[in-house]
Length: 333
Ligand SMILES: [Zn+2]
Ligand SMILES: [Zn+2]
Image (cartoon, rainbow, N blue to C red):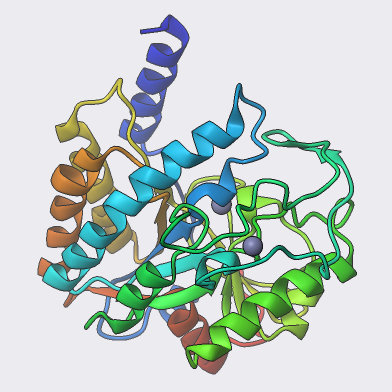
């Protein structure tokens, strides 16, 4: 195991132990953010993207990696849906719009991003959709997922389908102009509409924050950020959007034991209860399957057992609550 990774994992443990991460924010009006009789709010979101997320990653053979990730996500998602039913845990599924499709024949009519590079990706090919198999979900299950979306919609749990753009683009204003962004979102809305769904919650791919005013125009009420790890409160932007700053991503770090992962995520939720704050938790469903078998059930069980104290809700439900109770108010954080 590389020494650097070991040291990083150890430093993270120390910061967590000392209470320095997640940062605990205070607010005089904290009661407005936590509806009675609860002591904390917990949201869990999942970035649902299959192969779309990794196709431009700056690694050797990114498409192969994208397929590997998609295989894991396909294996995990039905299990996660079952677990959510067992413990009644709603998830906000930030869904790549292309996954709604049963089949496609390319997307020539859509505006595309020009070449760009960011921290994680490099796009330098002639066509953004060059890896799209122009096929269907049975033959190419890593690029389409109407079957999984239907499982989520039909579940007894009140999940939310949110938006993660149509093809997992970089949304920053300097990379993505309104024409590209609007095309992407309109495609998502068109497909969601076929299921009677209204998209309200947005997660920018790789947290490439941008096009915020366009989000408002499309009817979104909230988005998630990852600038820091915080147990705090949502912030409302001038355009009305609510920003949910992340508390923690459920990840698997091989330097930590299974027991430590469980301890850490449950302890994070306990701190939210103790400090009357909002925990914004999220994950990529492409983690190793033992996370779903051994770690998630413990977290979900804890949430379920303590649901008298914790409002476990989706991003859009919480945004609706905020719009009814905290809209356009100034808070001292
Ligand atoms: Zn396609
Ligand atoms: Zn993503």
